[in-house]
Length: 123
Image 1 (cartoon, rainbow, N blue to C red):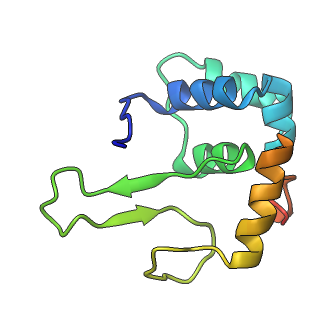
Image 2 (image 1 turned 90 degrees about the vertical axis):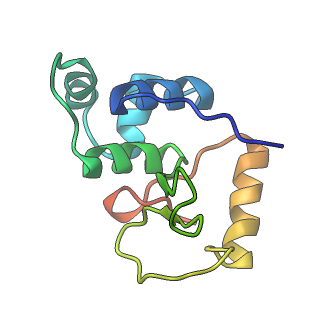
């Protein structure tokens, strides 16, 4: 089944992720390890943009990932997944079977991964 593609700015993406994941602003901020006030300021600042690091930390804490895709297939259909402090790997499966099983359990229970060091989920 083809994926649905929606073009949004970083703040719209965060709001959509929160809505889809059932996260309040307070819960999303807590998962990312920042104050609710700081989170609200980042989302509410008119005309400002958020850093990629901030967007990554918030989306990662909510269980989402950032994917960079060759949009027209000009470069061999390559797809990159933004990962924090990870050696480059080229594979179709980027988590171990043990990690995948734990993530499946978390997803089935309806609970987002708890943040670990630097906002990365602890699994």
